Length: 295
Image (cartoon, rainbow, N blue to C red; front, side):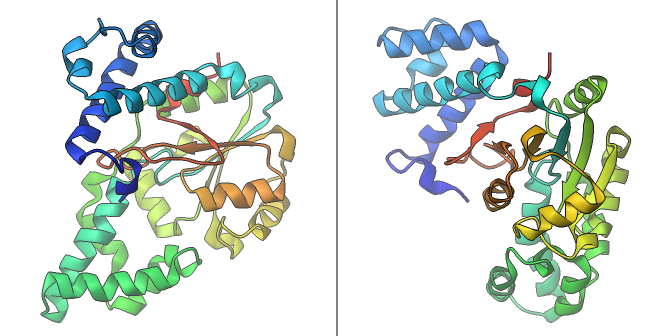
């Protein structure tokens, strides 16, 4: 999905870099700092040295850039001053939940069922469906279960239940929600997902009790990509733009929120745990929620 992130190296090298980042970050801040120092000074890396030293020069440079970026984010004072935050708005799919479920559902499961129902080959089904999907991307219909049920002649809500075992919560999400609630800040789920999808995922994950409110864009009639959405949200969930944090994996949504005036904005590097890390421009981003845990 994001193959352009590693234009100069083959994907196998990119996978090695991703694995290095995950292992080093899992070993703690001191390990990451030590590795950064070694890479900057072109010295042998001591921690997980076999894994890191297998990278070629370009791979080591990319790993260094990733680790430096992570540490800049991890230093909370450079990203979030929790004393300034009163409201925390959180996206669902790709932010709190692994986007793998949605990507698999729309790219694999729906085409499979569409091909079976219409007695056509899988590739033909994909071609027809992806054309329809791209035409509606970013609109309210794009996120609407009922719309696609009518358009495709399939019960989309029922099809989601067929693969709902793939619905998963990103690491450290529950701990983050509990920590933020403990500070007395208002925590609100703000999603473009259709109400039927929201219900399915809340039932599957049991996250609903961690929020002060659940806001579905369908109830407001506009997707979050539309700057007018935030004015409508303001009417039912009052917030101060300068004291609100929004975490969302969608860059168009973050741009919309920025245009409205929301000042504390964070993206997500890896919405889909099965996909590579994304290159994020214009916004600070997190790899995992433990990086911004209020202390």
